Image (tube, rainbow, N blue to C red; front, top):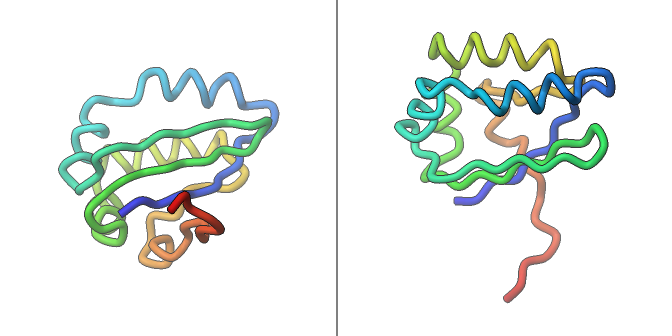
Amino acid sequence: MRVALHTKVRADRVAAYEAAHREVPEELTAAIRVAGATSWTIWRSGTDLFHVLECEDYGHLLAELEKLPVNIAWQARMAELLDVVHDYSSEGAEAGLPVVWELP
């Protein structure tokens, strides 16, 4: 499945956010893959962040990552940089952006 998400970086933290993503811990990227993600890309427009990820089951991916120490540490770091954070709770599985149109 493909999931699109929207988060927001704080205007004064854009450089720090981009720097953090140049050094995502290998342990975290491995855990994201083990949880079922096959790709995850983030685009930025101003302070708006748009994520597109592909995975087997988004709810399962979130459940696997929610209590993982490396993800908890990463999310704490991201919370310092973001105005709108990625929700790893079970409610977060419903946070994907609705599809408006897709090329048939």
